Amino acid sequence: MAEINLDGVAPEQIAELLKNATDEQVLEGFRMVGVKDALDRTFQTMQEHFIPEKAQGVSADVQWIVTDQGEEFPYLASIADGKCAITSDRGASPRVSLTADLVTFIRLIMGQAQGPQLFMAGKLKVAGDLMFAQRVSDFFAAA
Image (cartoon, rainbow, N blue to C red; front, top):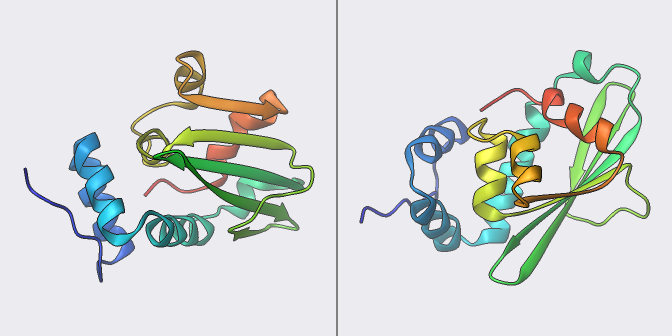
């Protein structure tokens, strides 16, 4: 099986690699780089792909929790005043909290899986404002 090494690869190239990767290759690539480092880069790219027009009037914290091998990686997207700041943190009272395993998260943000279907299949856990959760993906341009 071909390995994916994400070291030194531009975000656009990573997106292309991930689109064509199997679930096993996604896991191998992230674990090879280090899940935390790879997720840090992923969320940085998400922040850069924020679309302010889609989040007009929104002031909310969105909690992401990505899991891998029993470990949780929390990220908080704070959206306000047409800006989005994402930190590796847990929020005190996010408007919505989204929890998924690593592969499910990657498939979701790459547009290869839809949130409602993942939720119904039990692969995406949502706590808080369910209606708002459906809008979250619209706030970011697809990779």
